[in-house]
Length: 100
Image 1 (cartoon, rainbow, N blue to C red):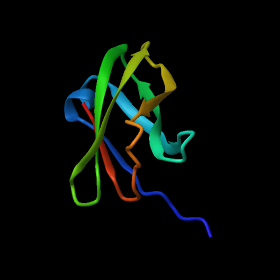
Image 2: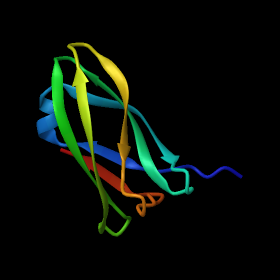
Image 3: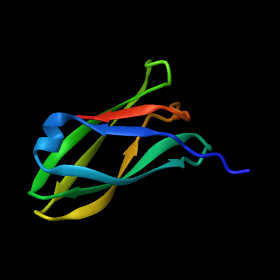
């Protein structure tokens, strides 16, 4: 039986206003089997160069990890980017990740 992940990744309004949007999002495990990597497909309508900071929250709204990702895309560009949370972060089903 395959369980469905329900991870909610949200871009801040300020990031959206700069033309960045999210496509596919998936979670991957590290070598220790902890689900602490989030793969993001990002696209943009304008050139976008910035470091985005992510915070992960459990289903009760408690913070459980932080990460950052450098994004450097040309106008109308798109690519996959990886958020690597701390080794002890194990993203849970129904968690939320915010990017600012």
